[in-house]
Image (cartoon, rainbow, N blue to C red):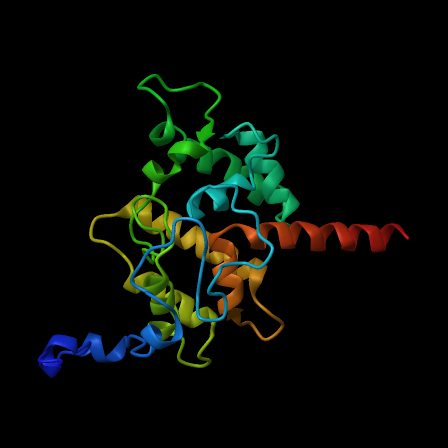
Length: 239
């Protein structure tokens, strides 16, 4: 017999209107097994209970998989020129890719270093990428780089108002503002840049950023997809 009161399961509080405005999915438990359990190897949601079909996780955490796309030679480190190559591969322009190569490695290199002496080449060590996790984000990655299904689902249950499984530009902006942590200037800037880039690359012809696009960026499979699409376009132009 369940003796818990209704209050113990409530997700809204009358004294905090924001809890009613940003709703949680009360049916997630029925849609996905153990949604509260952060997955180390796969990015899951109700439509993908086993993660991305055919995706090789290589025994990496989901966060490591996200970053590994930019490790172009597979040595476990991402150098600035590899960051540049990776951004160019997914369709970013020269200036965007150059800026990413500078700022991404500048901010993420030292936190992932093996010791206290920084490398002049600014490599990002994939093994330690969890140490570079920033604030003001959706918290879909936990502090160890696992994928938290409940946090991912909350992106859409809280902010997707026009379409249940897609975000408009205004909804992305609303989410970014809501996720800001106090006094976290760096985290805010990085989170803004990440989502603006994702929106520009992943939105459809109607300006919608779909749930599957967002899910696939977390495990890095979206990057592979974008690279393949760019190669196909280049091939078509050469014919």
